[in-house]
Image 1 (cartoon, rainbow, N blue to C red):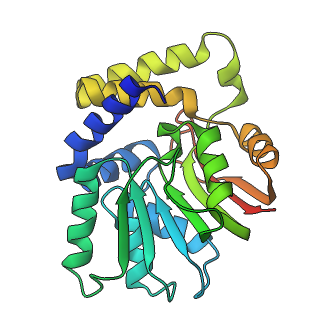
Image 2: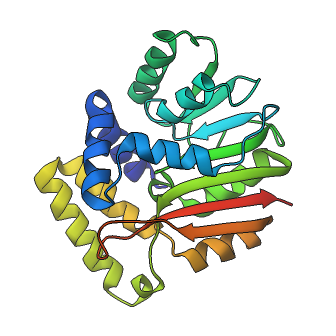
Image 3: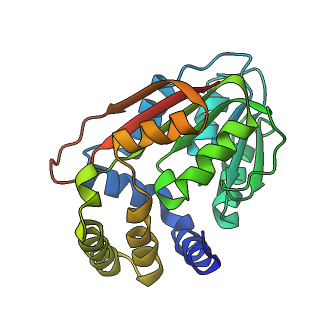
Length: 241
């Protein structure tokens, strides 16, 4: 990700941090008919998780997913969480410290495209609603690198269509996204969301990328959405070879 785009992304989510969960809840309800808590529950319940897992929650935001995992005792190990935006992580830290599981979360400020972990560190990488803000190939490569043999990757995020590759289609979608978020939010959010359109992958593109990156046992499924004209969420799961 070019430095300018990274800076705009950090600026956009720094601005969102104080009201992040309310805004995401509102947008998920508008676009997909989901609540944010329902989204988190869907991701966790659809992800096979074992007590012995070492878990990394990528792009944790305010720590909702990692907090749920820790609170429910899904793993006997500490839950690790990573995000590129420090104000988001501060709120995640406050969430852990204000609960009775304050020492169960290990938080770090870093990019998902260059994760500061050794090879084979985690048995599960989980990521919710964030890959469209990443250079997806780099994120998938990094996830493969830091996973153990037979480690699992589990994602829910917006999915695209192969029709988006028709010349001009993505450009038009970017314009619509920019105008919507410019009106409802601000310039940095509008730029971050319109730029993210280039990172959205269709089911077939996810499949090809995961296979090419050394994953197997792929499960890629379109989930329910209330609006046919809004890109549907995809459940994306794979196992490291």
